[in-house]
Amino acid sequence: MPWTIQNDRPIYLQLIEQIKLRILSGAYQSGEHFPSVRELAAEAAVNPNTMQKALVSLEQEGLLIGSRTNGRIVTDNQSLIHTLRSELAEQNYKQFHQSLLELGYSEEDISEFLMQQQKRRIL
Image (tube, helix red, strand yellow):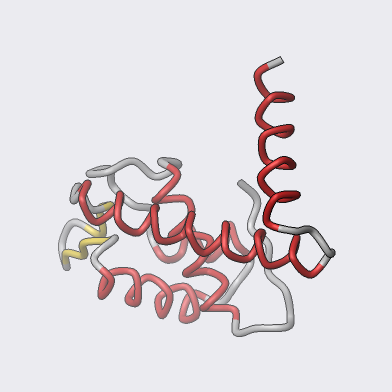
């Protein structure tokens, strides 16, 4: 997944969102060693201090576990990962749903649209 940094919001918040998504999607596996601040900062083309700020926030949230001697690992707390993943899915759905309402779709239209999209994926 490439890093996408935009100028409309603080960089560290965007880093938090992107790293969280990578953890919740399984791109970074539970219990695996997490890349160093310098590695990630170079990869994302951001200042290491900015990356450190993002990682500290993810540690506080419980998604990363830090150790002075062994670096960081991704949490193996599957309950936390499942909960955060469900919350993110619900946020995304609410935004999508609101966008369709703003386009003039009714609740029935939205249901029909979703069923049509599901059928297309099956075929």
